[in-house]
Image (cartoon, rainbow, N blue to C red; front, top):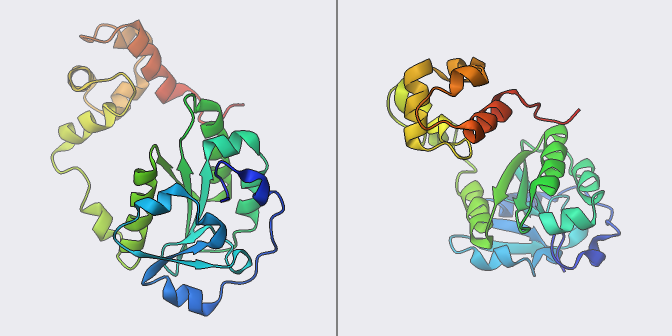
Length: 230
């Protein structure tokens, strides 16, 4: 059984973590390093572009190393709903790493409650949260982290949307659930900027073509509802 998976009983007693050995850090340049208990994790069967080496559970504080500076914890939402104190304990014992990643497998039909818990834990634990809706997507994240372990931020900046301000504004607005490209164009044309859309009242949003009550409520929630509940 692997941590964060479908058979969590083996993870109830967290072993005492030792300091990562230099041999594991060096090996992580050539292969993804995984705890032994991750062997049954189905995401590993989807890894194609790099090797995976296993170490004893008490030799690694993370679930995976995707390079000498990149520690990855893994959690599934099913597991999170069953054992809500597990993630906090793992984050506390993770230790200091340049890149601290929480890889979350979204495997429940209604993920809102568990996602909120995981997001808050990642935020307060200072981890970058990656969400994967399939095993293959989770594996691709691990492979990408390993592939880019020695590259600078410029390698990621090159993937930013190319184009003028208007093009990027449309892309940002369409990330809001229910807002399509036509809606985004109408909003951009009326308000001119993301700040303008964010500051607009419901009464100001409604006259936009294609923007009904439901979309107005969605936009209002995105821009004005607190990220964390009070």
